[in-house]
Image (cartoon, rainbow, N blue to C red; front, side, top):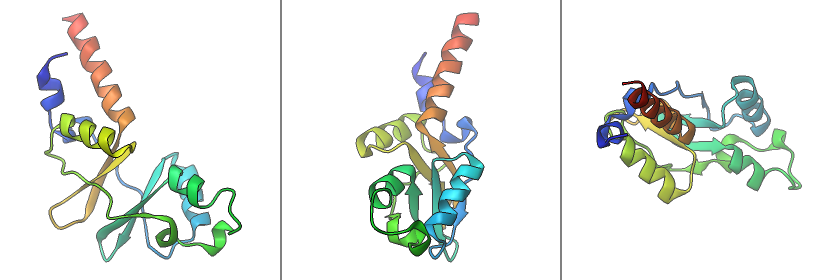
Length: 139
C-alpha cells in the first residue's frame, strides 16, 4: 500500500447515506431505526443542520441499565452534541487520524452549509485498505 491510498479523498470510500432523525424522536424509535438499517449510528438533524449523533455507545452508556425507558427519552437527550465531522474531499488519512484520536467508529460528512451528506466508519476505511493491498498483489 502506498501513500496515495491514504491520501485519497473520503468520497473514494463511497460513503453511506446518513440515517437522520429529528431531535424529538424517541430513543426507542432511534433503536428501531438502527436495527432496521443495520447501522451503528443515527444523525440528529435540526433545521437541516447536523446537531448531534446517537451511536450504539451512547445508547449503552446512557440508556441500557438505567432507570429510564427508551420511550421516555428523545434523541436530543442522549446524543453527542457538536460531533466531529469531515468533508468528502478530506483525505482518508485525516479521517483515520480523527477517528483514532477521538475514539469513535463513525464520522459524519457534511456540506459547507452543515447539511449531512454521508457517513464513514472505521470498517469502511479498513475495507478500502484491504482492497488496495489486494489490488497491489494482483498487479
